Length: 108
Image (tube, rainbow, N blue to C red; front, top):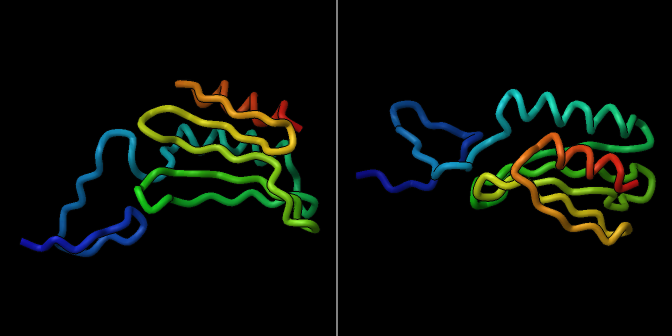
């Protein structure tokens, strides 16, 4: 049996990838909500990036382009969305991505 570790962004033909519930990339409806976040932090002043943690949990960060300062971070872990904003001393979790996005937008 092949035990090669796979990431959701790099499937290998002929292999089946099984991720635990709540793991994997952002779903389409979550991406739509993240679009609201991106629209609230326009470029070139801000950069919005997303990816996957080593454990397969999706994350999204907003940074100031010039300084690289982290404005807000959102991730989904075990079906919960966590929002963190260092400057606002914000760290909250919710089961609703719409609430998480609103928290992120209000954090600035």
